[in-house]
Image (cartoon, rainbow, N blue to C red; front, side, top):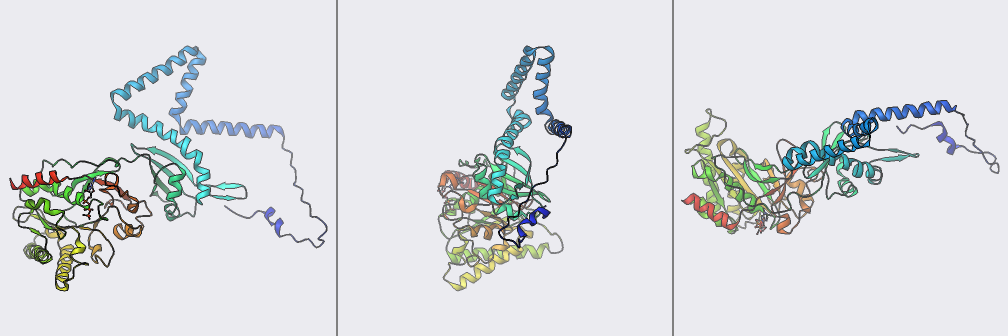
Length: 470
Ligand SMILES: Nc1ncnc2c1ncn2[C@@H]1O[C@H](COP(=O)(O)OP(=O)(O)OP(=O)(O)O)[C@@H](O)[C@H]1O
């Protein structure tokens, strides 16, 4: 692409007579006017064909009324335009979702392509370093299309040959601010093509009330909140272990309580048992009745409860050996969800070495062997560093709520998560704006998804406990 041309060598010329200027005269080739006209006509024709091919509907919208006005008079053209506008307005009023899907978002996408992305593309690419300006020519990545959803613009981009995804994920801030968005997320569409997601507004800006308790008894995935695209956030708890990391006040409690809430019918039916370890005595004590006698707060009691869970696990493993490889909850063998609030209190910050060892060993045993026999761990943690929770990698599913430092994001969600847009360290510390907002990596996609947990109030928790005891 950047091959050297013969003319570039002029700068390396050395004159042996310094007082004689070396003069270069461009060779002038006179092109006949007819050739120039043919070239222009050809370009015009190619442009019109390309326009019709790329935007057939938009072209028809302009061409048909113009043709009608030309053939039958301007009143007819204007009448057709008015009729179409009236029809579209009626459609929008009667069935808004189908209008938005088929017309609204497409029109908005076209407008944003022209007004935002095409208009700012060249300066943003050059200044951010994603495009190159070489000898008067710009070499830029290409916008292949823009799609609008209810909350974001999804821009498909063809990278320059030689670009890496990291070149783009390192420049998400340049891209976001360049195109007037608050953030930008990068994901791979296919080789050489990227999807850039620019949120237009934050659909998770307002707190969500507690999710309605489901009718059916199920061990999950349970609805615990909402994803950024408006879909329910479904959290898998059976057949996995979940680690919830977040600074103080990030809303860890809302994830834990929403998960328990979704399991409530199954708890009532005896298909699920929730075992609670509450070393802070603040969070889980609210719904103590829900856990019956499977609640521990003092570290020694926590160690005993964890060892009891290990015993259940081992007894089941002995019984299931050679008969079944996965667990189906029954009243005899219910799914046991061990919920630990602030697990670091029991591990890193525990001064009694004996207890610390017992608790760490029990947690490691549960997280390595509990999945297949129906024992899961849902643990919350403020500080995700390895020296605080050495077994954090034993949790297959992790949730990053607001974190204090940017490095902690990759510690929780895995390498490269922050570069791909999991900006958990930038979540607002104001409870109404940021509490419960998190980034998760779903099994189906390496790209982090932004979610918000529903807020389960103290009254909701008391009502839940009341329902179970009743
Ligand atoms: N999902 C949510 N939506 C809106 N606000 C929330 C949500 N979760 C929590 N909050 C607000 O944030 C405050 C702190 O929440 P919470 O105590 O659950 O945080 P935490 O992460 O458990 O903190 P800590 O580690 O200090 O216990 C709550 O009092 C509530 O006002």
